[in-house]
Length: 72
Image (tube, rainbow, N blue to C red; front, side, top):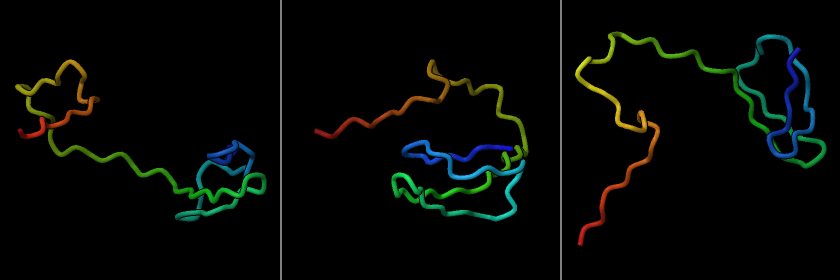
């Protein structure tokens, strides 16, 4: 069984078995009143071909946010 908790106050909303059968669930927390939107996890995308060997990630391994310089 898996505990599903409120994203705001962490109160227990419900317990469920391994996989949900509903495509999406909205449930209101009785403690704080937050409406929680729950969706089943999406499957990982399948790769058609491996990445090119000549492309290497930078020092941040693609996890950084870059900004463009402002003109002027």
